[in-house]
Length: 380
Ligand SMILES: [Zn+2]
Image 1 (cartoon, helix red, strand yellow):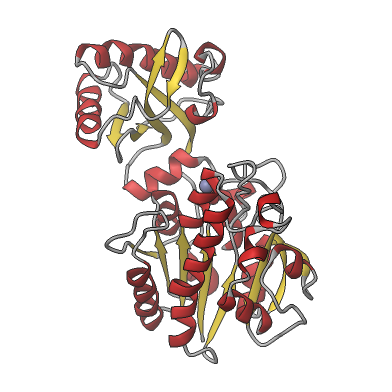
Image 2: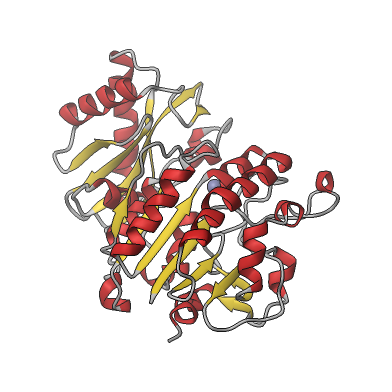
């Protein structure tokens, strides 16, 4: 038996006035998702445990049966895993642009990749503490790692959440490590100004210790691949010991290489027992706040990914779970924590005939804890 988990990021939504008081999913009524729901047992699942931010990292860990309450240490550590950064403590580290004490741009005045790489190189070569390390990722993104433990992890704020606000009120919590972060931030202002960078400060956030994830194969006895368009997901995949796959032409948007991605899924399914596909496009248009575009994005996914796969997979030999990780309501343009609709195609069926928020809710499984999805999929 093979197992396929399809996660269109941010697919679930609220009812939209501009769509006749229907959700984008209800309005789109995608043929292949509906077919899958008809052949499946359905329900809605809580993927964000109480007290957690509705992020893809938390939701996807839950879907994979890994309890974030036990295993999640922050976004910085997961991105560090994905980049293969060594160390004991990790923070996401943005290059930002601050003017008169106000956070103007979390992406460093739109600093380019080459300039950001050079800025990180100089920060690393002139750093005031030998136990800190700067690692560049993509454009304004990087990781600040510590090669030794320094007490409690300070609370921090994501720079995109404090745009237009006074940074003074959002500096790291002032414990031992927090004081070091603040010193590094002040020091970075001098360095970045001296080299004439478009960005003028570093902003460390979402710090934590290296997470201890269980090994997926040991936990479930299955060889596994993850195909994803983003580092955050690949970090989770690597942390769980899964094979992680990138596909040429992936854009993490609706213009992504659908055909290449769908082919990669088929290829991985031939080689391994379990394949997870996580795609970004639908979530991105949710952030743009455009309901009509979200409907189009859903229909594209339905045809180019799901339809393509359903035509080519041996459905008797493959169990499938279709589930968004979290809602991204176009009205809010950000993520929410409500339970998401899901369909599991194994040996059981219910009366649900359409894949949507309201229909799946009537499914036989009702509301479940997302941590139980894997057990149901695997029939254990
Ligand atoms: Zn998102």
